[in-house]
Length: 229
Image 1: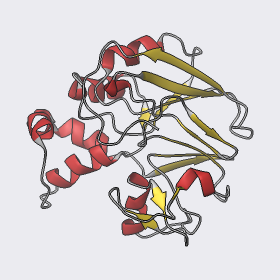
Image 2: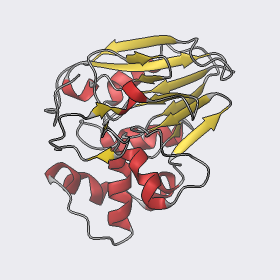
Image 3: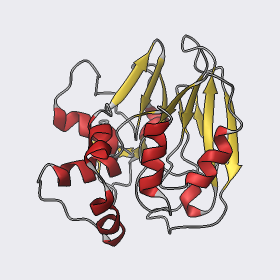
Image 4: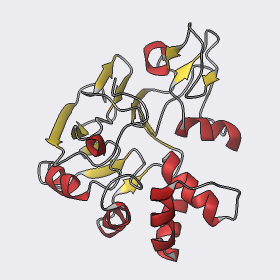
């Protein structure tokens, strides 16, 4: 079976439809998370995934809406305040079904990143949530928040040692897929006016043997919080 893994959708449903027209027939389709928020068709994209039985990893944006649904003390931005009331019971059931990671042979799919100190053999929830936010790590491989001031920080994928297999991830937007020996960053900032990308993997025993497919964004829908790398 061929596996197709999409970068962050963020409501870019039209581009997603364009990209899906390019994938091999009968592929197993996977999202890296962050189907919701920012773009023009966030709720519609979430329901499109449900309708087409597209598997999705939990993204930090889905997790934020879910925690709000659970009654946690969550502050939604203006865009999320527009989206949250539109989500129905079936939408939250779909979100609750999203795992924090997916492992298939040598392939692992997560939303954001992992440190070399974090293993996926039943970690605690507070460690699992790091998979939704990981970008930079310090000299000891520990998670750093978005606006840190550590001059010795490293992007996690630059130091990832491959201990959890070949990882495909999103969350951090790049101008082009960020290809390393043990990972591919597949979020190419469609919602920011760049591209929507997917990686096509014919064999999960050899996920490093893959192909990238892309479509251009139809327009710019949002401003990035951090520049595209």
